[in-house]
Image (cartoon, rainbow, N blue to C red; front, side, top):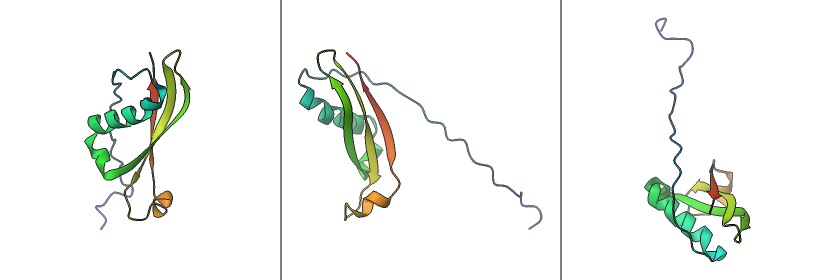
Length: 95
C-alpha cells in the first residue's frame, strides 16, 4: 500500500493531424456526403459511431467551406445518444 504513488501519471496520447486531399464535385450539395464518406474511409473505427456532418459556411464559387463532424457512440435509441460524450472533428474545404 505504501509503495503506490500518490498520483496516477496520465499517459500522453499522441494524435496525428493529417490533411487529406480529395477532389470534390462542383455541386455543393454533394460535398457533405462525400466528406463523410472519405472520413469513414480514412478512419474505419468511425464505423462504430453515428456521424453527423455540419458545414457551417460554404462558398461554392471559391471552392471553400468549413464545418465539423460530430461523432457519437451508436445506440438503439438516438435520443439517448444526445447525453453521451461526442467527438467534434473540424472540416476544411479548400479549392
